[in-house]
Each structure stands twice: as C-alpha cells, then as structure tokens.
Image (cartoon, rainbow over all chains, first blue to last red; front, side, top):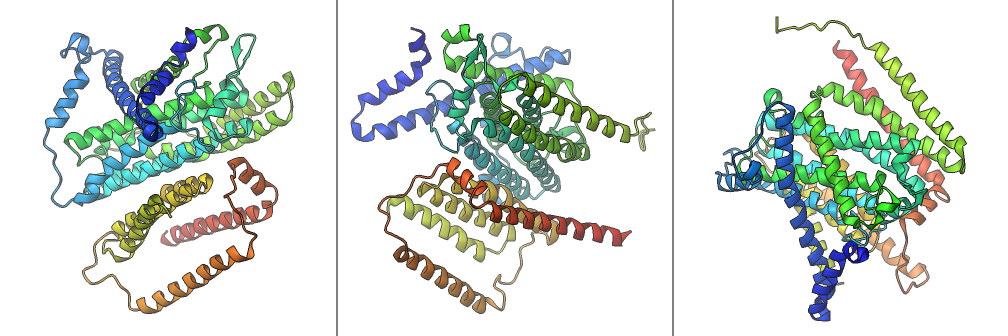
Amino acid sequence: MANTADQIFVLLKHWIVSIFPAAIQPYLGVLLSVVAIIAVFPGLFALTTVIERKGLGRMQNRIGPNRTGPYGILQPIADGIKSLTKEDIVPTSADAVVHFIAPLVLVVAVFMGFAVLPMGRNMQLVDMDAGLLFFFAIGASTELSIFMAGWSSRNKYSLLGAMRAVAQMISYEVPLLMSSVAIVMITGSLSLVKIVDAQNQYTWGLPHWYIFTPWGCAAFVMFCIAATAETNRSPFDLPEGESELVAGYFTEYSGFKFALFFLGEYLGMFSISGLGATLFLGGWSAPLQVLNFVPSWIWFFAKVMLSIVVLIWIRGTLPRLRQDQLMNFAWKFVLPMTLLNLLVAAIWRFMGDGILRWIVCSAILIGVYVVVGTIEMRRKKIGPRTYRYAE
Amino acid sequence: MNVVFWILAVITVFGGLTAVTLKNTVHCALALTVAFAGLALLFLQLDAQFAGFAQILVYIGAVAILVVFAILLTRGSETPSEGVFSHTWFSGLLIAAAVFAVLAWAVLNSTAALPHVSSAPTVSVQQIGSALMGRYVLPLEIVALLLTAAMLGAVMVALHEKGEQK
C-alpha cells in the first residue's frame, strides 16, 4: 500500500501512456512529465505568494491580504487576473524584440532546471550523467535574460539595475558551484539521482544526509547564502530595492511581462531549494527510517516548502546589504571558505571511518572561521554611525 | 544527418551570420549567444553531455556576459550610422576561409588515419574527470597557470590606470 502511494504518479503516467499506440508512447511519457512540472510549480508559486504576503504581514504587525476568499486564499487568482488585464506598456525608445524575448528566456531557462531534479523515487524527467552541471549551466543562462531586460528598456535605472543584478549573480555563482563540488567529490558522481541514493541510507534509524557531516554542514550554510543571493532574495535583494534603488532591470515592464519576471524569480527559488534539498537534505529520502512509509514525493515537496518558508522568514528579519558589502562578502569570505571546504572534504574522504576525522575536519573549519572572522571584525572600525546628509 | 541536426545547423549558422551583419553591437553579441547555444545543442546531439553543458556554462553564462559588459563599459551601444563592414573585410574573409580549409582538411583526413569505429563510444563524465586528472594533468595545469597569469595581468593593468589618475 505504502509502495503504491509512493509510486502513484509513476504508475499513473504508465497507465495513461499504455492507452495510446506504441509509436508515440516515449514522446507521450516525456510530454506528460513536462506538463506535470509546468502545472505543479506555478501552482506552488500561487500558494507561496499567499504564504509570503500573510507571513510578512504578520512579521510586520499587519494582517496581510484578507479580502479575496476565506482568509485571502484567492488573492493569487485576483493578482493573476489583474496582471493579465493590465495594459502592456513598451517604452517608445525600447528595443521591442529584445524587450519581448527577455522574460520568456528567463521563464524557459528556469523551467528547464526542474528537468534533472529527482522529486521522488523514480520521479525525474531525465536522469543525466551530468545532471548537476546541466542545472548550473541552465542557471547561468538566466543572467543573460536579466541583462536583455535591462538593456532593451533604454532606461538608465534599468540598465544600472541589470548590471548590478548580473554582477551579483556572477559573483555568487562561484561559491554556489564550489560548495556543491564538495558533494560531487564525496559521491563521485554528477548525477542528482546517484547523489540522493548515496544519502538514502540509515544508521541507527538516522539518515546519512550530507548536512550531518562537518564539511556538509559548512557547505550547506554557504550554499544557502549563495542561493539566496542568486535568487535575488533578501538580504541580497538589491535588484528589487524599489524604495532606494528604483528596482532594477524590470522597471519598464508592466502587465503580464512583469508577472513573468515575478514567476521566474519564484520558480528559481523552487528549483534552487529543490537542488539544496537534493544535495544536502537527502532529496526525497525520509528524515527517519521509521518514517519511510510516507511517500517520497511528500518529503521532497515538504523540504522545498520548508526552505521557502525560511527564505520568507529571513526576508522579514534582515535588512538589505549595500552593493560593496555584498561583493566583499562573496569574494573575500564565502569563496575562500568554500575553497577551504573542498580541502576539508578531501581530508574527510581519505581519513577513512572513525571519530578522528570528525574531530579534525570540524576543528579545521571552526578554527579558520573563528580566526578569519576575528581578524576581519578587528579591521572594521565599528563605532557611532556618522551621517553625511541626514543631519 | 537527421532533422535535428539540420535544425541546429540552421540556428547556429543563422546566429553566426546575424552576429556579423547586424549594426547594433549588443544585438551582435546576443546573436553570437544564439550561435553558442546552437553549438552546445550540437554537442548534446552527439551525446557529448559534458562538452555541451560546459559550452553553455562557459560561453553563454560567462563569455556572453563578459562581451556585453565590455561593450557597455567601453564604447556604449549606439548604433553606427554607416555600414558595419571594415575596409579590410576582403582579407579577413580570405584568412577565415583559409583557416576553415585547413581545419576541414585535417578533420576529413583524420577519419582516414584513425581505425574505423563502427559505433560512437560512450564516455561518462567520470572518465573525462579521470583523464583530466591523470593523463592530461600537465596540460590542464599549464592552462590553469596561463589563465591565472592573464587574470593577474588584467588586474595589474587596471591598478596602473587607477594610480595614474591620482
């Protein structure tokens, strides 16, 4: 029974495919999986906007949307109708073709990232040998769409915002990749399916997730920082600072094109959360051996939604960073720490089993973190803040 | 030669041709990206996953961004009013044709020199990694050193200009 519930979507797909003639069955199978991905994640996006607006409202002592439907649940439908019926304004001096293509490129590229994520046992669109590389390659091409949006608007604020966003994304892509390389070193494979399989083992009922190792925990923290910056979320949401920076690359977008950028951003959050869950939190595997009767896809989506909620919580808590702080943080702290983490992962790999490697690896990571942190904090002159213009 | 190959070939050649004929420099860079993407898809069509994804990651994710940044930070993106062809287009065409001829000759001869392989070998990413870290480790390190030297050189050039202004 538990097995049927676990494989229900796979069985359903096989059943639907088996109705049709054999010639079109492979194509139909792929088509069904693609339709499922395209249907499920925008649905989650609608759910997330409600959670975000209600949650942020509560954190800021507001009530949040509560007029559309019971408790404001139907708010995303109202938002969708609003953005569809709004006028689509294209500036006269804008580059119409590039202006039109940019949001499409973003959404298509983000959707492609879902192709390699294993969302449950036997539930992935393609099991690529180089799945992780595919994910990062597709993620890198979203930067170009942001540049296209900013440049084609022919607006100084858009162009500056696009340059800022692209610089930020390029800077944080390096630590994002580097923190994932540690996982690849230990697993010995770039295939996300194999990475999940390697973590789907239990000792004393506890899982072998990579977050429960010294290097895995360090890599997870740095992955989260880099992923937050990569998806332009607070505290790294400079591309969206409407109040002080005139937003950025999407300033000149309105109506449904703006909604597409919004959708692309949230889909990026889902895919990067899914990747983080796959790499560090065991993907679809259960957190305890006794909980294995719960279907695997429930675990995957629970982990993704949990990380989304944490991202919303961070957004409600932390102030925005300045551009130079953001860059210094990426290049002078996170990147060296990821490089150190690669070394620690190699030590972990070659020290063999035993308690000693836990002590050595943890000592190196914590020691370097404390020393570097102390030196960096000492170099900062922290004192009463001076204001140039506000007095 | 199947349908997919012809579609990809048309996309790649179209991207390359528009990259040299369009007037606006940023449009040229974007067209060049289309050509890069077409090449990456050609690699994927030949079952060379690693090469294809590396092509996307490096050329679309980094080189194309670098090109547009360089265009915007140096000359601006105004459209030139006169034609885009330089005066030396004919000699450029000759050199490009000569390079293409040499490469095509080498590729065509290599099939005769190598033993006939009936089916394409399946190469996993792991094998590529072992080969890079084992047999080809010296060329890899030399390339890494060269790139580091280039980066240091670029930083030095930038630092020098900043010092002069002061």
